[in-house]
Amino acid sequence: MTAPTKIALITGGSRGIGAATARVLAHQGYRICINYRDNLQAATVLQQELLAICEHVVIKQADVAQESEVVELFEYIDEHLGTITALVNNAGILKQQCRLQDLTAERINEVLLTNVTGSFLCAREAVKRMSTALGGQGGAIVNVSSAASYTGAPQEYVDYAASKGAMDSMTKGLSLEVAAEGIRVNSVRPGCIYTDMHADGGEAGRVDRLAPLIPMQRGGQPEEVANAIAWLLSDEASYATGTFIDLAGGR
Ligand code: NAP
Image 1 (spheres, helix red, strand yellow):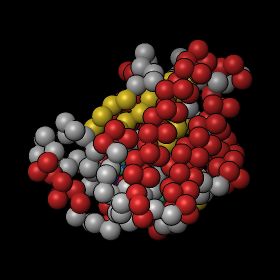
Image 2 (cartoon, rainbow, N blue to C red):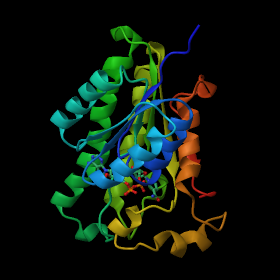
Image 3 (tube, rainbow, N blue to C red):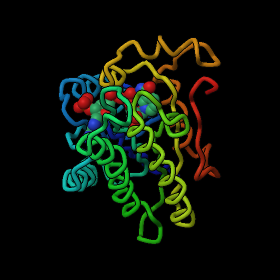
């Protein structure tokens, strides 16, 4: 009997942790959709790299904060790859470091819209296609949360931390909602990982500054997160749902 086709969407898959995850899944034989928001060049370069090891790799621009674009993204996957079996809710943003007293409603809403609403919308579209109660074949979802959900990210971005706290609640609630419908929902919570994201907070060297404070005395690499995501998606994690893997060097 041939194994069922594994089809993955990685939101924000063009750079950082998402790109590392795409590489791991490509080596594992998935068909892959790399979603991105702005940077077409990064997505294209990664697509070309992965096509050397994987026959089916598509890239699709969509802002996960926009409901209509999320719907289009999933329809694009239906058409070009087949029915999704794995969702990595990875797209996420943070803004300039500051204290809560300096946050504006506009900024808070922007962070929540991408990190929380975007993840909910993608999970919704995935569940519609995966749920055995709705005629689907099951699947797995991994939410990329953050250690910030339990540290709170004081003096940096409490809004971002709170968005990850919301994702953690979603992981738990959704995992229970669909546990008997063939869908597993889990989460990874990375600590300080070497990606471009820290520059968006105004401190490109943040990981090196914090490394001495991390029990393992170093920052993490995107691949160290990607491997955990791939494991949670895999059949090796077949009895795991509603769980969190902290990848934060002991924090
Ligand atoms: P990154 O290097 O900044 O990459 C972000 C990716 O997300 C890019 O592909 C970007 O697309 C995409 N993106 C951003 N907003 C989007 C939107 N609205 N719709 C669709 N795609 C969007 O980030 P990263 O560090 O790899 O972070 C990935 C995830 O890990 C995030 O959820 C983040 O919160 C989480 N995380 C990161 C760390 C860390 O230390 N790096 C720690 C804990 C958790 P473009 O290329 O088009 O801009």
